[in-house]
Image (cartoon, rainbow, N blue to C red):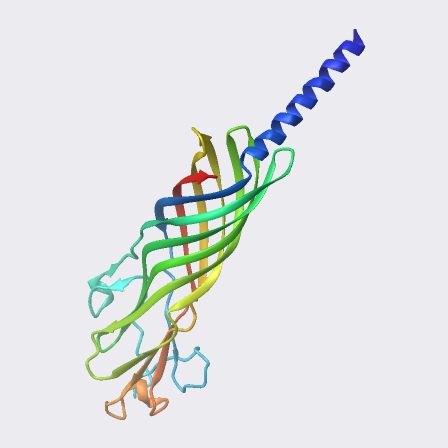
Length: 274
């Protein structure tokens, strides 16, 4: 009796192992697909604009008036200023849709385990702004808009028959358009910096096969881009007492206090496996 039970258990284990191996094999190979989802940014209400008044590369300076007062005493807001004073309000950052295409290749590693890689193009519509208010009064707004992303990731997971659960991590390169606006009509403002930013992604998902070759899934990704090159320089013409040229006649540089352009995305995915 014991031998029979042991034999049955061994056979069951072999069958289960074969099913797992077959499950992993079913997910192996080339696939192409598309995705659509929604991207949202974390709260950045504490972000500010930093100043390099003497143009020495150190953005820890305070812009002061000729009387020694802080020219930006009214403060900052983590969005787009709607007027020259904080009381005019601050528009929230804009979240939006993400969509794109992908291609990848998965390998059956052992039993139910699957390992592979994916290359992806993603179009996005996300805008992130920060504003400063001067005592003039005047507003100064720095904005960055994410237009698109290229990503290369590895992913690994476990197949449960027609279901695949996985984690993914990789690198990204994004096209980021930066811009500046102000109600200050006295100074000239010169912008500089690159339009691209690099970073990383991580996340996970669940995918289900159906029909012949098709799979449908849901995926979460966290993306972090290091966007640290954009600068704005406030210059003349202006009187010598102008706060932006008091420290250096060549002007004062601005930058954002937060170099990271981060967002979450939840997507639906559709793929065809060859």
